[in-house]
Length: 132
Image (cartoon, rainbow, N blue to C red; front, side, top):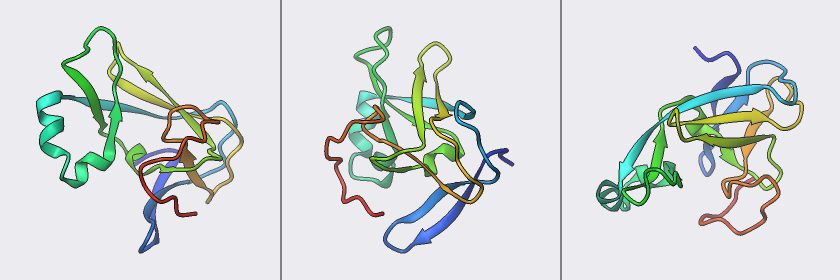
């Protein structure tokens, strides 16, 4: 069971999302997600599957170019996108993990969101229709 996050159904169009199980203070690490690195050949094979939607670009200079993507093995997979996120994520290339940290106070029951573009304030359009 996860200390900070629970997954709930939001709507048919939006699917499921991650929600705060308790109040979370700004600066709290809410999850450290281990990743599976995907060789480029495997990534090409999943591009027409649902797994494609759950990949992170993995730009580790030590392992490029054979591994350019990763999938987390964590409840954090259910954190939805927002252009006004309440968490950020950082790659830990040595540990092959992604760390998720609250960038503002999050109230119990509030949806946990991140900017899929990687930077908190990046307003570049994403590859899907954003549902609020």
